[in-house]
Every structure is written in C-alpha cells, then in structure tokens.
Image 1 (cartoon, rainbow, N blue to C red):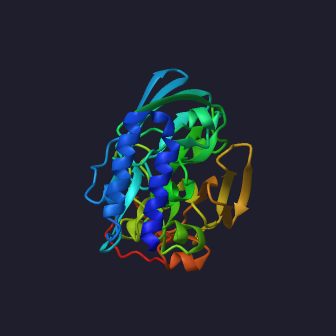
Image 2 (tube, rainbow, N blue to C red):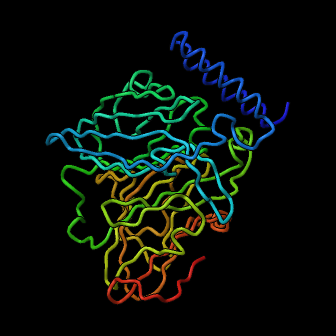
Image 3 (cartoon, one colour):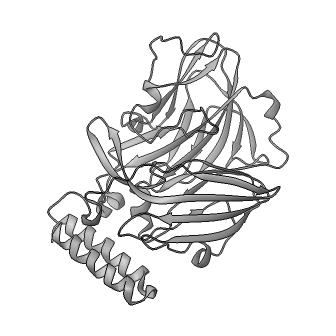
Length: 351
C-alpha cells in the first residue's frame, strides 16, 4: 500500500468512525467517499477534494448584546500558494490559512455557528479561549451540515483556535487554525501608549496531507502571516514572503503592539524583533502576566502573547523566530518604519 493510499484510507476511516451515529443516509455518503478515495489513489490530492477550490467566505461577527456575540464561520477546501508555484489544497476556516482573527470581549457569551462546506470530511472548532465540554461543544459537523454551539469567554488573552476532529494533527497541519483575541475588560495598562497594532501568526507546512510527515518529518516551510483587526488592515495567508514583499508599517517614535501566536502544530517559536527591545510583554495576552525588557519571547505550539515595543529610527525591522533554520524556510516579516508611517517605496531589509 502506498503512502498516499494509507493516508487516504486513514482519512476515510476517520470519516466513517466519527459519523457512525449519523444514520443510514450518512453511511451511504461515506461509502461513496471511500470508493472515490480508492479510485483516486494515484493522484496527489485526497480524492473527494481533487477538483474543489472554494472561494474564501467572509467571517460574520455580530454583537447582539453588551456581553453576547454571534460568530459564523465555514470549514472549506481552498487552494493556498505557499511559495511561488507551490499550491496547497488547504483545509481551512473561511478559505484562509490561518483563518480570520476572531475578536471578542472578556465576559462575552459566544454563539458560534460552523458550516461545513467540505464535501467529504467532518470538521469541528476547538476554541482555546472558552470553558466548554469538548465532547459536546467541540463536536463534529458533518459535510454539508451546520453546527451551533454556545460558550463563555471569561479569560482575556491571545488564544489559538483549531479543528478538533481526529486526527487533530492532520486537520491543523492541513491549515485549520487561527487566532481568537479576548480583550480584557479593563484593558492593558499600556493601552493609551499604543500607536499601531497588528497580528502575527506563525504556522508550519509539510508534505500535502501526509500524516507520516506531519508526525515524524520536519516542516518544508515555517511562515508568518497577519490577520486584519479592522477593515483596511493587511490580511495575508501563511505564505513565504507575504510580510516581506508587503511589510507592516509604522512611523518613527511609534509604540507598536503585536498580538502574536504560534499555531504550530509541532515547532516552538522564539519570537524576536530585530533592532529593538520589547518594552512590555503579556504572556498569553493576559494583562496579569506582564513582563518587561524582553529580547525574545518563547511561544510553544498554541502559545500566544501581546508584545509591545518602540521604534526610534527609520528603517527596516525584521521580525523573526530566532530559530534561524525556520527563518530560512520563511518565518520572517518586516516592519518598515518611515518618517510619516507611510510606505516610501524604499527597499526593505529582511533576514
């Protein structure tokens, strides 16, 4: 049996086991998926996804009360160009990898709806920011179905979200991950000092849908992305050079806040901004976890932080993981600092 056959068989087996409670109609669909997967084992793409490339779907976040918010997302299959010519048929939230950032307030009740547009594989949502019963609140949503869940977000911070369907490693490594920010009800002590803020997410890419490589291999790419906090902010996928070709911007004297997250799934991030020292760091984004004067912040897989620093001169400030083998694989961004905070068209320096 070839490696792809084993992976395809494993994924189909996962579909069958996880959805056994779905009744006879689901079983018919699942048997059809199994047959299609077996007939496509010579291709490089999981059979039922072979000709699927779903257009990104905007996330819907609507506040319906002072302490209640509706969040609607999709699970879908969308092509992502990781590097020039390298197209990955990613398993995504809303057609982005990482998925769109979710921002709520401490104390909010989240009414969450997940629509699974994947034609073959069940998916789910595991929000690290909530208190929930995983077997109930992070339950699988079958293909072409919608699931609704409700849970409180009572702890402030920068958290990971990801698909929690078995094998979890496959779902995360194939692209189903993102950031949820729970804003502290009393803010951060440094809020009034902040001039600009961005998100930075680190993720890894491996061989396509290869559980053996996900488990025992090394990433072919480690990349940075940014997700829009508000309309008009830059928003990228986790691709090589995304934040070098189009750097983040600041002006001389700005105090910059970064919401940082390492979604892994396997590697640690040694987060570092070249050319400055971090004035304030809030580990996991919690205002009680304040540290000062740090040069590097260690982020385990799923670890987050709020990082703040001041830029004092014009120029290019590379943002990296100080594990430089990962920088060579794409884990670098650039903050371009100019006199007025606008892009002056000058060449940027990166590592």
